[in-house]
Every structure is written in structure tokens, then in C-alpha cells.
Length: 224
Image (cartoon, rainbow, N blue to C red; front, side, top):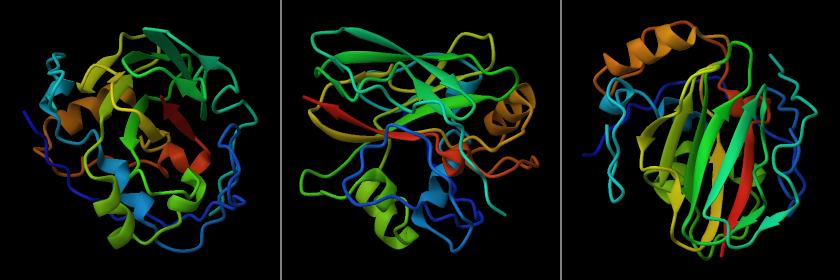
């Protein structure tokens, strides 16, 4: 079943990324203007899957911040891999190859001490050549329609099993993908998941800091 997401209003943050730079490391984001990337912070809001972990493989089921220096994605390719376990830390993705084969299933392991993390993957249009860092600077009216619905959304609280909120992590269609985490910084994982499940597609009424992608928790992934 499909989940509809309410777009929250967040403080704009503009990444400084040269055109064509691979998103393999975290980036510092000076706060400057509202960007389309802000709409991504509510991807997990109101997904019924947060309270009952089941998925459908064809549809959805229910100031400045300085990034960590940990790599957001490795340079290695994972040819023929059927499963890749991605590790979420504060604030980057570890063990995420830059390239995987179509049909590979991603899973998420949260190695952070207290932050809730997610792995959200959007397939980019075939004619889109800009880096994901450049795309996150676009106005909301441009980026939102271009991205559409996420291909997969996986959530994991520290030390807990992942929750496949959208899909099961399998990426079957070749192309470029934006991979990111949009959980607000500092929220209590249990409280956030409970609030999101009860929000019915609205933004949870829960205080939190900037979404994790503003601290560099995003990457570019190619499926071939």
C-alpha cells in the first residue's frame, strides 16, 4: 500500500560540492536557503510499516553542521552481490559500494550509539547528470517532482533489527540513485518511530535537529 508524506518546513542548507565530485565523503553544509532536499526529511512519517514490519516488493508498505570524516560510500564495486549490508554511523553510510548489480538487496545496520538512522534510495532520471550534492541545492519545486517516490526506505534504531518501510531494499532498475538519511538529529528513536506511526502522513510533533543528510549522510549509488 502507498504512504503519503507531508513535506515539512526545515532550515535550508546548501552543500558546497564541485560538479562531478563523487559523494564518497561527508560534506559541510553552511545554512543559507531553503532547498528541495528539505522535503525528504519526512519520508518515514506516517508509514504504517513502522508498527508492523512487512513489505511489498512492488509497492510501498506500510546554524552550520559539520560532517563526520567517515566515508559515506566506498569506492569498491560489488559485482554480482545479491546482498549488501550497509552500516549507518553518525553521519555517513559505511560499506556502501559506489556500484552494485541490478537485483542486489541492501540491508541496514545501525552502529550509532543513540541516533535513529534510515537508508532512503531515489532513482534519478536517466538524463540527469548533476551530482547528488548539486541536486540537494535545487528549489523544492524542482527536486520534488524529479525524485518522485523513494524506491526503498529502510530504518534501524541502534542495536535493533531494520524496519523495511518501503520495499525490502532490493534495487532492480539500473541507473543512478540518491541514497540518504533524513532522520532529525537528536530525536529519541523509540519516541520518533511511535510518533511517526501515529502521525497519519503528517510530520511527527516531536522536537529534533536538522535532518542527517545536512551533516553529509548521503551518497550516490549506481545500479548496473
